[in-house]
Image 1 (cartoon, protein in one colour):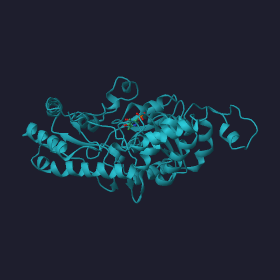
Image 2 (spheres, protein in one colour):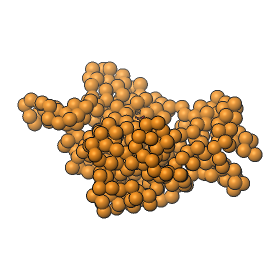
Image 3 (cartoon, helix red, strand yellow):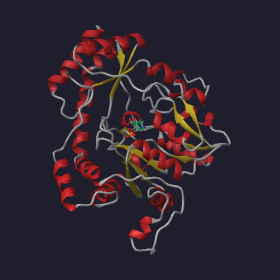
Image 4 (tube, protein in one colour):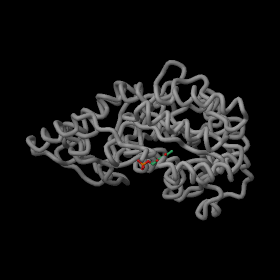
Length: 372
Ligand SMILES: Cc1ncc(COP(=O)(O)O)c(C=O)c1O
């Protein structure tokens, strides 16, 4: 059986977890949380990183800090995970869905402006498969309209755009460390704060709305409830696991890119033969997070999933566009042809660090066989 994903272990997770057991400190914001945060701040060039329980939590904390509330609108792509829109809805605000580009499945920067209204507060682009959106266009549009740019960077660790880490774009960005991501800790995430104006309040919001961080630093003699907040911290065992992964993240990205590039090369003849389309990566360095293909129609895609499964290969579809989902129908009646049409034709092929050349050859050969 070739699974779609096999979570990678570096070997050091166990070593660092042993260290935590010896240290005897298990709650959030301890040694390993701080190491992870410092690593992210240094490598991803952000003013502050907060290690949180999930990518979903990072998005929720981001919307609190952005001051999103009732009556506000936030523009999100329709082709994304529910968490991007839920974070907006949980603040009592409205997600406004925009269509995506068929070449990257990222938000179509040319369609954003039409979705801007006097109520729009922010744009939340998603870096699908770790590939950059046109962030120059999006940041410039955000500046023109006085909006916040708040990327959902769940899949984007290790990617770069115009010579800078992709995660350093936008006022804040949300990362995921779910076990399906390149770097993981089972469940986890990070809120990356690029605009220092949000840093002070972040310390309060992550500590259940208290100024406990100042108290811990000895800056005040008691702490109290000063703002809204929640428990956005992770325990030390999770942070220790994550640190072992972060240390290896460059090697992980390198290996995934090798595998991604091999798929890209091997599937070229099928694209030339009109059987499928490969993803487009232009103007950025991506991280090999997902290798996806677009089949000619939904029926072929579904048949391919079924026949690959029969051959012991886990190939999977991805997001059902949110504007078409039962919950999404409450928010938007826009016509979003590309998201709907392309998501029905999209297929993700197995890709994991320990994938062998034989396994990849078998997947490619099987795709060829089914499509020919
Ligand atoms: C684009 C996107 N946003 C958010 C999330 C949520 O991340 P998590 O599972 O860590 O909560 C995911 C997870 O797959 C995602 O793909």
